[in-house]
Length: 95
Image 1 (tube, rainbow, N blue to C red):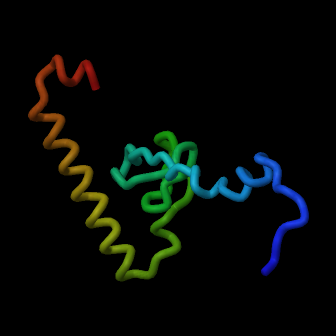
Image 2: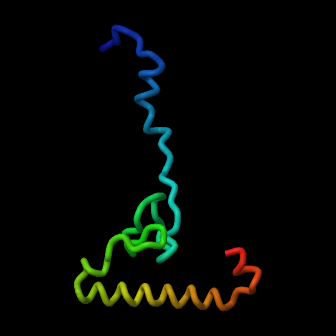
């Protein structure tokens, strides 16, 4: 049976166990489309970062996919507008 010649140090042992302590990435929500996005990263769904369009996502899609994506964006905007209409002045000032 194999026996180690020398003892592993605690730092070497702990480096091997580092994967046990990795935490899942913290995700935020995209302000434009509402999908989950990693912080300081452009949204891959809509192509926006900090309210500015960085990449035109629709340009890369074919005709059928583009139509579906446009409908999705329009529905999301309509939903946000209806929520804003239902809010009181105090809630709007907090937002």
